[in-house]
Length: 122
Image (cartoon, rainbow, N blue to C red; front, side):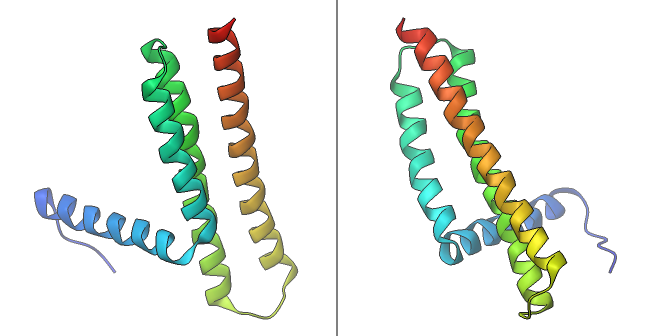
């Protein structure tokens, strides 16, 4: 299944696939929608705050990381569900690990926001 597309055509096709993935995540994953709304609000707040550029990048980057990990988790879940609906220990483990990755990303984002805002507001 070699892809011989190169140059700008490859970039355009890749952008189309990425858009399809984002759209699929938005339509099919409630967690992605919830975290997406939270991310938009957080990004607006980060842009509104009177902080230095590095702090702003860290604030925004931490919530964007949550979105990235959620998309990867959703991809894992979709693949596991595609393979079979019957319970298998490895399938459950894969889904649990994806969920754990999202949790860690959320904890990192909350810690980042708390630390940076605490240091800024003191």
